[in-house]
Image 1 (tube, helix red, strand yellow):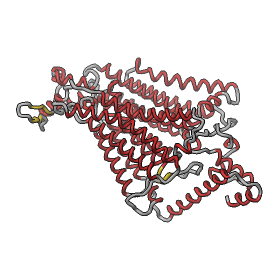
Image 2 (spheres, rainbow, N blue to C red):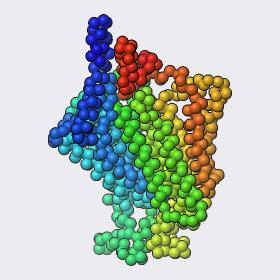
Image 3 (cartoon, helix red, strand yellow):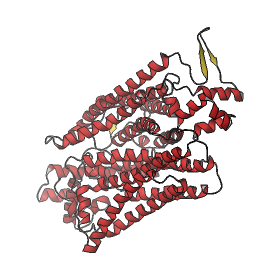
Image 4 (cartoon, one colour):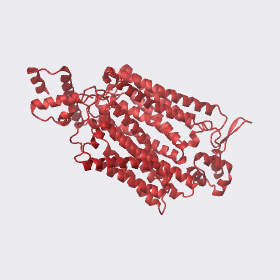
Length: 612
């Protein structure tokens, strides 16, 4: 870099913008060398500890990277891994919610719990990819509060029978209160950025935008909290297992240590006359409002000629996001593994469905990580704002579909273990000592079972619901994978691939693959209407995933990308232009006659094009 600057000063001076880019690259490389030396000297691996060796009560949050700077991947932060452990429990509880009520209402409650919980993870990840909060007491206490709120919310992810009755149960009230507190903490973190950030002016404007989006979410969460609190504290109905005695104004606990007490406890839970689904609907809509706001701002900026991302946003460390999103998907796949392994065994077709499920999840993991780029320059977040937003939106839906798919495999295995039992609620009653005849003759028990799932002895209805969950979630997983893959290069680039093959025969083969993938998604999405047999469903699921993997491998061989120019970087890229750095790299290589080391040496003439 120094030789290059010296030569340019002697001959023709570079534009100031390019000189700044060269200096930024050199500074980032020097910082990386210093960090590596610190590692070898025995320094910790936590990213915060590298930048703040002295523990303070408060330190200003620092912007991780500025526009045009080379991005350096932060070191492993074990606090993030600990934070992720709570989502293992969240995914498992969400699966239990679906198993207790495999109906449309169960799906509503699943989404109403999943999206608010998931938004906490994405809020933290996007914050960490843009800022370094520092190793201080204030921010450590903040992280502790977030973890406590998150853990409490996960604890109250319960079956629909509990969440839908705020008058008798506190579950939905506590859950919505936790979501409200978590959002208020996110607003406070954004205010901290606005007032104290050590970074560019765009960081403050980005903080203001986050405050507005989080405030809309908080309003919906507040409404859900108020409605559920009004039902719970304004009702004289006791909780499950309790009856209210107006004579002596006391609560008589009917839950005892005896089997008869357990029976009355479960039977008491059958009174669902005061269901209220409004709090859950508000939670679901509130979580979606953040995505709606991001979509609106993104597409509005596309039509605003004066929009400058450097003044309104902060670049994301894409390498860090790729790493964290990969860990997030592993958590979702982990729920599928738990669902398959934590099931009582049974002879016969059980093992056919089990091994089909295990192979399916294993191949699905390969399919996912083969489909996603591992380098920041190849990611949708680098390409454009629209591409990044589309990737994130479908990535969230993809995560939900993975949990449902894993739970569907568990419900399929339960069809062999509990052949004639109509759901988890009925099994609880059997465990408490009821016989099948007693359940059929007790009106309270029948109401409890009806609120928890399909009719108790209608095996066909239950298997139909399981088939719909399995088939639609599988189709959604494939659809989201394809859309996320398209987002990395863009629709135009992928359409050119279909017309850029070496011969006419290959071109027709490529188009046939596209139609096959589309047809497979549509077929699986509707397969639950005419196929409900559990063993056949699991086998067809395995065959479908194998075909998808074969199409993905075949597509790499058929489509010819060698003669296609790389997609130009959008001028409104939320993570900084790549073209300027590549322009500098090419001039350095041209003058020195040597290929530069690292990523700078990978730039080609196709990278040095004006922004689209």
